[in-house]
Length: 229
Image (cartoon, rainbow, N blue to C red; front, side):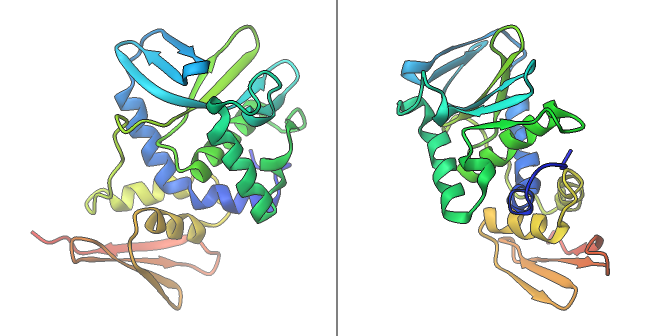
């Protein structure tokens, strides 16, 4: 899934992989399985009985295998509905990540172009600090990706008991740098952390600590934590 992306992009995506995976799960649990509609001028999205404020992150053309950022869409550029997408472009400019600043990306050379588009949506969600992303069919061969911008979407909170499972599931998504993934998770939740040799130690809000050990290949070797009763 990662062939064709730059190292800068992959490391940025990795930084959001653990918390992003958990947040997507929370969003999917929140949204009902129901028809959807959107009114882009008002940034409104409805799925079943759920109404959300959203932005358009980008669109994926299945026939061409190409991704177009919302900020570069000639029909939407400069409008409020692509403000979050434009913020992703500004982040890319500031950090030298060309995938965020290139108007249209050709994904046809990837082993799985559709999954590459999902990675772009995932990374854009992370950079925008959005509570997930929503991909929907917008016509024959076109997939549109929305970013929720609404406090009604539940947040995936840090659960010490579920932490080992959450960390292992998140780092398996990309696999470029498990340490980057773990560090990004604790940064997202505002958890103090420190590095001691091959171990990352995070001080949880509960007063407990979690110790994540990495092997010589940079993979997670062990996760130890204490949970107060």
